[in-house]
Amino acid sequence: MDKQILITGASGLLGKALVKQFSANGYHVFAQYHQDEPHYQKNCDWVQADFSTLTGIRDFLVENSLRFKRCGFLVNNYGPITYKDIADLTAEDFYFDFHHNVITAFEITNFFIKYTQVQAVVNIGFEDVGLVKSYKKILTYAAAKNALQLMTESFAARYESIGFHLVSPATMEGAKIKSKDGKQVSPQSVALEVFEKITINSRP
Image (tube, rainbow, N blue to C red; front, side, top):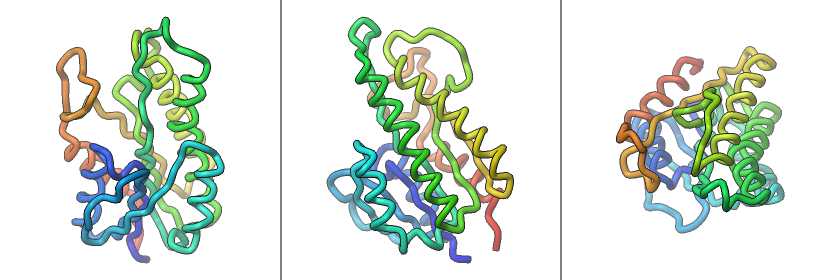
């Protein structure tokens, strides 16, 4: 089987590192971006999509269904963050982060299970996934990422023939929102961890 992979959020900080990691190691990458198509990358097709609505997600999948048919791997990297004081939060902020971080990953994963030859899925969390604690600025984002963990584990239990993984990195170097404790990791090291998770489930 051809090694083909869809990476969402591919034009961002981690996304670019993921594209380079996989394209340099023999994978053909379908790299989703929202605006301003990035520069040419070997072994990579840039695919535009607007995931801000459910219709946008579904249209993206239907329009590219033939391209993804032989895709064996998926990285759900797309997931913007709401950075806002709790006193300023609205219900819309919860909707926003849950939609972008959970619903988008769910729709794409569900499509891949039904219509592609998917062998492995990696979802991108954040370093506090699984912890019960308070947050001053990223409450809605943290809630969404913890829901993503539950989704990942539930899919793994239901579809035992597919490898489901959650990679939850610390704040990355170059990120707009800085880590309070100063702990940082390089996007390249996170991309390598994702690559290793995918290759565990790679079959000839």
